[in-house]
Length: 255
Image 1 (tube, rainbow, N blue to C red):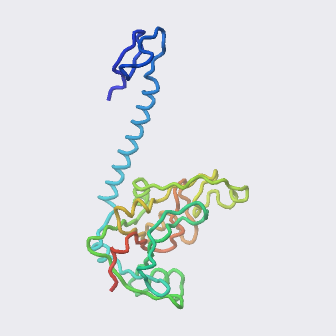
Image 2 (cartoon, rainbow, N blue to C red):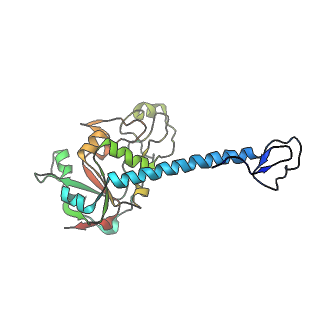
Image 3 (cartoon, rainbow, N blue to C red):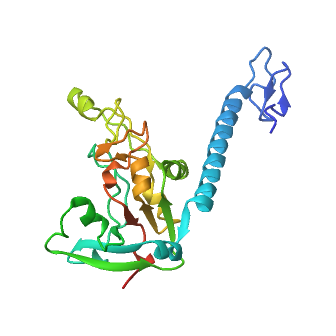
């Protein structure tokens, strides 16, 4: 795309508007400069959008799985008190910096995976039985459901690039800086700016769930029981276990 203005003043300067108010002035400076700056900003915005589009396509081709595929590889259960009540289901929302250690999305529905010994990932991790009052309900995804499966740090970064969410900057007290700065589980950087995480609200418009495997968890934030730093990206440490976050309740079928 040419960045030259199409019209020329009598003084030789360029302009983007044929009937410019300084078009007949002598010695005036070019009025194309503001427009050129706007054009540069537009070009940068287009480049960002193109990059985001490419990232979304990469997720679609290399990270996304079908419900049928997930059902064949994983057994899933809910571990909710009283079981699942679709009438109380809340749409997923992104984390905000009102809690600096909370990096998981809110709302939605959490599922645990079941291993070969019949243990769900919640019980296996906590080394105790499912709590009293909680019921374990088996379920599966509809075959045509679209699932994001994060099995490595590389795949996590692909999802971040395609669906980024960065909370607003917060003012940290000196004590908060000491507590949260550099912590893998924190949602903020040392200067109070938000770390980049997944935009679950945007993701829910195209996908039905997000599955983070043990491998994806360990590579993207949980090294044994220690938070693993992810630079300016949100660590997945607080996900705790191999689990699924359901973005669309209509994509699941209870057994």
